[in-house]
Length: 352
Ligand code: GDD
Ligand code: MN
Image 1 (cartoon, protein in one colour):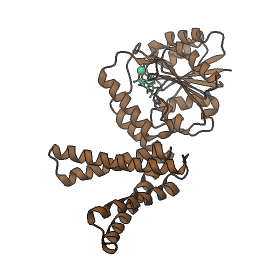
Image 2 (cartoon, protein in one colour; image 1 turned 90 degrees about the vertical axis):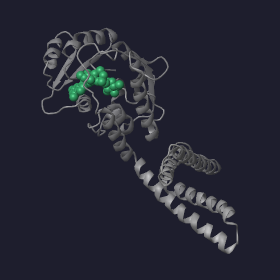
Image 3 (tube, rainbow, N blue to C red; image 1 turned 180 degrees about the vertical axis):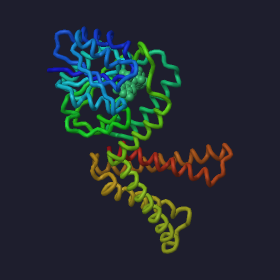
Image 4 (cartoon, rainbow, N blue to C red; image 1 turned 135 degrees about the vertical axis):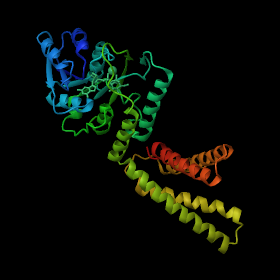
């Protein structure tokens, strides 16, 4: 099987020689090509790569009209001739010695193999604690927002391998720069493997990804949630929630006026009926296409979600009151949080 290594570059001139050398010794005896996709770097990266292509199996694509990390990778896929694609950075933060492990994982049956900082044996070198927290937090948000990738520990890694078929004829959006995330949502695959690696320090030059990253990442997540239909689900879930309020109010009124029930007590069956109403519509509509556990499990799990939501609502209300917030405002925040919690518990547990 032929391996195509795709390396997007921007001002990486001084890293190329060592990069090519280490890739070549890691893949000795294998059929491979290195594809450098350079965006007309001012430091002449493309020129240097061309010069080195006399020594190493390198093809250079110099782009003058397009820019961007993700679009460079996508362009690389389009011209790559291999059966296995590997994507990596040029700055040696991705050690070429890990490539054989990635390829092996694919040969053993994975469709996508991710070089991961966050599986056992993987790590990052020299990151301040707050950078670690931001990185892990961002990944956690992504895994919660996109249930499809919840088992992948490092879905934003820039270092990964995949079978050609995973991205062939798949339209990838080059706007977000987390190209792996895009592939994990839109690509055609069944199995993902993660291979540990140490995300090292940059060799020469400087990072191009700055402060706008976090905002861009959230925008990218939002777009992928839309694409996945998760936002549709959120909307449906809130419509169902609204019908629940109506059901709750109606039966409260009904039990008090026709059964003469105590107002305090009547609240219980009214709430239960609202929960059952919501369960029914969510089951038949909001989550109808998802894998489902047995009926009893679903309905129990739905109650658990309702309970958790109520608890969170009450807790947040209490905390905000304690902090001196206006009580109606505190309640609104609590309701909002409860909504999110109930949605997530149901999405990840009741209908997973
Ligand atoms: N062609 C092209 N065009 N290449 C680019 C561009 C661009 O606009 N911007 C960056 N690159 C290249 C760089 O030259 C480098 O080879 C690679 O993309 C990664 O860029 P860095 O600037 O080194 O990124 P980083 O180290 O901050 O981020 C890396 O780690 C992240 C995980 O923390 C990347 O691998 C990210 O993809 C990854 O998510
Ligand atoms: Mn880097």
